[in-house]
Length: 183
Image (cartoon, rainbow, N blue to C red; front, side):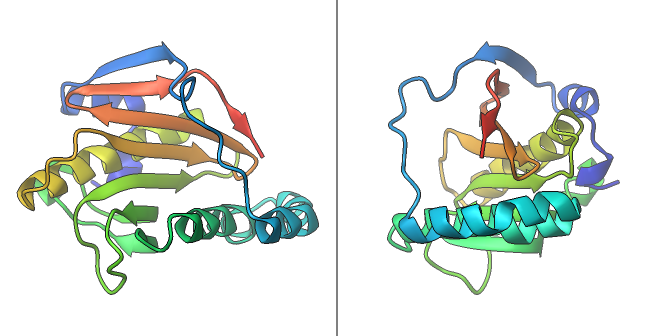
């Protein structure tokens, strides 16, 4: 079993999670404007990625540039990993590849804790990717605990590139933003 084998119902049952769906997670959050470079890049390339319509095209032409811009705006104090193995607990099925993983550390050679955010790229099935993303978030929570880092909230997102759905894991509660955010 691996992350991709989890549905939302399965991950909820396996890890005894409570799902809270009717939240606006970012109601109190200040919006972060994209850099001019990202804005220009997305205007020139996002339609191409959507026309190609593969996870790889969306990942490379939309998602990765957004996350790279986030890293730059965080003054390179976070690390960004793409397509990395994140094997935390084989017995519980918390193993496999994460599309994107963000760590609150500037170290880039290997994943160090705290792992703070995971982004799962899906072609067009946002809801279908929630279980996989939540399983990766649970793995990040376990990883952080093992490393002695008390990180109370793990962030996650499932995206098609043009549509984003955000999640938070706090303790045993998985909070799913009712909003969908568009490119």
